[in-house]
Image (spheres, rainbow, N blue to C red):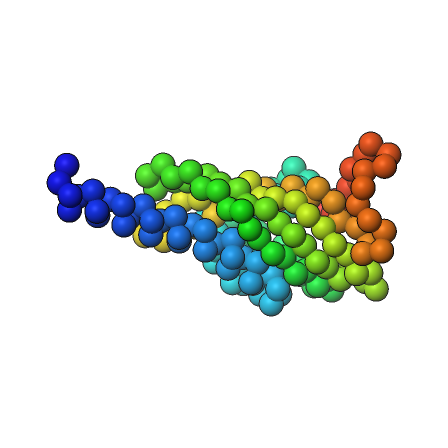
Length: 160
């Protein structure tokens, strides 16, 4: 393989990694803004999101409907970091960690967790093929999050 080919492959890999790592950052930015329509555009046509209840929301039409509901009446302020990505051609997997601030009703909340993601290159652009949210804790700010009773409670109510 020539040096030009090696350089081209390296640049392609770096560009792919940056495009993939940009997806969670853009996702967090859209959540901060309450922009469900823009969130949905980050997903592949048949992309899915599991908010941690084991029932993924599949496809852009369903994502658009559910994100409109999820972002109403709640203030979510996510920070994502420590993004690890494994590339495999036009597919990739990865995870990133989440620090979350939220306003739920009259409660100030703080939380932490991570996302398990899979990505796909669709029509030349990287998109989420799937996201699974894992919340470690989400508690009122003054309450703390130490696991004193050996249990982690349900964070999100069940969807119908």
